[in-house]
Structures are given as C-alpha cells and as structure tokens.
Length: 89
Image 1 (spheres, rainbow, N blue to C red):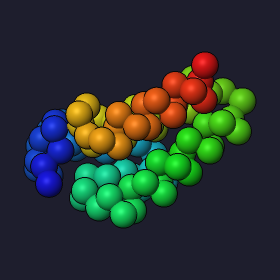
Image 2 (image 1 turned 90 degrees about the horizontal axis):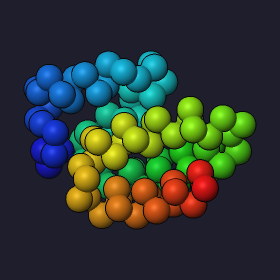
Image 3 (image 1 turned 120 degrees about the vertical axis):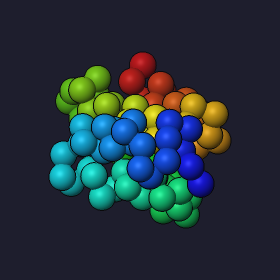
Image 4 (image 1 turned 180 degrees about the horizontal axis):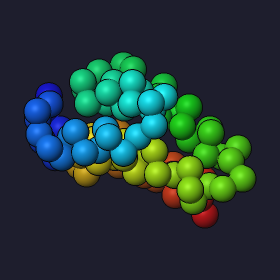
C-alpha cells in the first residue's frame, strides 16, 4: 500500500516521520506499512491519550500526522476524525 502522500522513499513521507519524537516514529511506521490490524488499536490508544490530556489541542498533532500518513480518504481516517472531533469538542 502506498500512502496518499508518497511511497516509502518519498520526501513527504520522510518529512512526516522526521517531525515525530523517537517514541512516535515506530508507531507511525506501522501506519506507513499499512498494517490495519495494528493500526486500529494504535489509533484507539491515541484517542484515549488525548481524552485524558490536559492540553488536547497540542496532543492532537499525532492524530493529524496519522491521518496524513493514512490518506484523507482512508476509512480509518474518516472514522477517527469523527472520534477526534468528539474528544476535542
């Protein structure tokens, strides 16, 4: 699976991964690899972290990056955008 914004060798993909801290890089690499069986639990955990966060706006950035990696029209992006919206507002 090639994400919407590029292949594993694209500058856009590398730039997205470079924006992450070391702990998040491995997790988002799961998204880049397109392994959905691992993606849903990961997105669920991030939603829970955002729910528990004192600075939800700041912590939503990881989800935004995940959406970019998955692509705007990906079913999980559409589903988790709604979940993120409920958590934030």
